[in-house]
Length: 225
Image 1 (tube, rainbow, N blue to C red):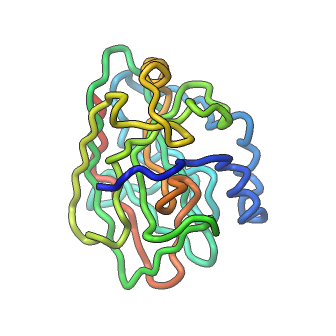
Image 2: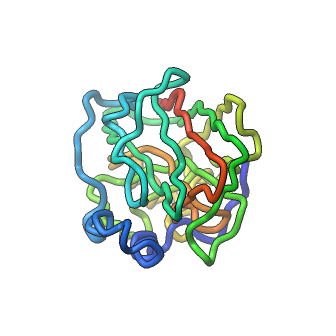
């Protein structure tokens, strides 16, 4: 588990676009509008269909992960200066939510992970997060990260890992790394997406790539109940 950083994803899209402007030309179009508002197939259920998950704002990645025999889906970390930033799925809640549990595995072969933001630092990470419906990526309370819902890439690669985080305000912080019980409750009541983001120790959604070797993220299960 990881301690809270000073921030999460401040000006995430603008910074990502500046770092990798050519590769991110299409992704920068989301700035000011947020992710596509695709409704989920079923309420209160996180779909594990890879086509329902979106890989957003990165470079050198497909639009969706692919089915994988070791889990529900997977993707390869990009090389050559590319990055994976956000991987998320639409979600609709019609009942009170209490817990997020993710089961995953990272397979790597001599992977040297990199963080895309020059102001960030290794080790590279991913973190559980959720996003409000209609978020335009500019509100401090539009996205929330689990403070103890993270993993340092390379630390236990090759093992199946399980992380569970209560959906209570003391466990989550907003874009600026701040806890706010009222804002958290409002965001959770209007949740539109769950997923994971990739970054470094300070900016949790600014992107991760591989400088050498290879690595694959495998999602085995993602449950919100």
